[in-house]
Every structure is written in structure tokens, then in C-alpha cells.
Length: 224
Ligand code: 6GU
Image (cartoon, rainbow, N blue to C red; front, side):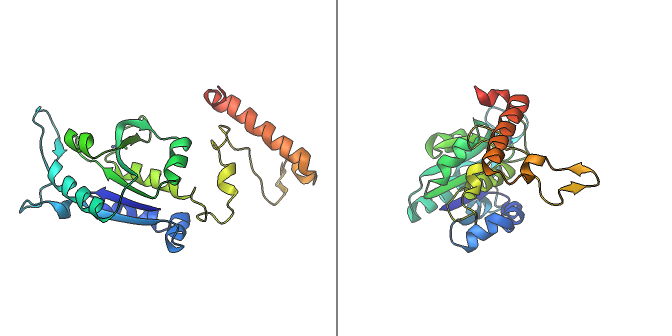
């Protein structure tokens, strides 16, 4: 899978993309991540990428031209399955959307800043708009990094134990059960006896029960 990120702040991705699973996925060739600085495609002598809104009011709007030039350049190089704009007014990200995206070949993610991008970019180029939740971030970059992280870890080969992504919270609409590791007794804080019993069937039943109880208590909306 290839993901192209269109941003005014490519350096914001260096940290998240150069550690752990996302780093390994790139090294293994499971995923290719490319960041593009929209400012490099400004035709303005001052490299301007935004302007005042025609409707007035506070805040700048990202101009169509540099974004359109960059999107057209990328589209000429390969076909894209999805061109995503990350925005607080998009559909809210969930595990099902991440699963869908993990099956795609090439996707672009456009990050907005200021008051967002000129509506014509959204009307003419964007195929899907995604938010990561009902709160406002400074820009789309952190949201894009969240989407990329949730998608890449689902690609076969990204996680060494391939079954592990399947047992995540949300993958079956249930939260994950509690987990424990050694020591079995830390200063009197004990691991539940059943987990030390060696009875695989009972342990599986306990895990299912715990997952269900936790979901009922914390996220009853998931059980509907
Ligand atoms: Cl995608 N962008 C911004 N700026 N804020 C957000 C968001 C996106 N998703 C939730 N809040």
C-alpha cells in the first residue's frame, strides 16, 4: 500500500512514521509513505498558499492552485483508490473505515489548516472526508497520522503476529479483556487464578466474559 500525504507541515510526520510498527512496515515494503509539502507547489513568488475568505470573517483559507497542481501531478503518476480530506466535519473514523482503507492500493490524504481548504478542492478532487472525533485540532496532520497508524497495522505483514490485529478492541465490536503478565503476585496484587489454571477452554470463556462485561459497562452503545 502507498499513502501520499499532502501537508504544509511534513515534519510533523517524522516522529510517528519513524518508530515501531509503522517504521517496520515501511522497511519491510508493506507500506510506502510519502509526504509532500503543498508550499513547494505554490506559484507565488512568496510561496503563499492561503488567502482571505470571500465570505469575510477571521481566518485564512488554503488556496486551490498549489493543492490542485500537487494532486494532478500525483494522479498522473499512478491511480488513487481514495483521496481523503481530513476535517472535523467529515465522517467519524472507526475500525470499520480503517479496515476498508487497509485493503486499498494507493491513497492520498490532504491535511487542512487555518479555516480549511477552498471548497472547490473538496468538490473536485476529494473522494472521502474523515474526522477523528468531535474536538478541534490545530490542523489535519495529527488526524492523518492517526488514520495512517490505524490502517497500516492492519495490513498483513505489518504486525509479526498476524492474528494480533484481529483480537484488538473494536474488531468484533467488543472492548479487549484485561491482560496480565508475570509476576503472578506483585506485592499482594494477584493475577486472577483462572489465568494460572492452564485450562485453555476456561480461559477463553473468561476472556469473552470479561470483554463483554467491560463493553457493557464502558461502551454499551457498541452492543446494540
Ligand atoms: Cl481531521 N482536523 C482537525 N483540524 N481537527 C479535527 C479533526 C481533523 N478530526 C477531529 N478534529
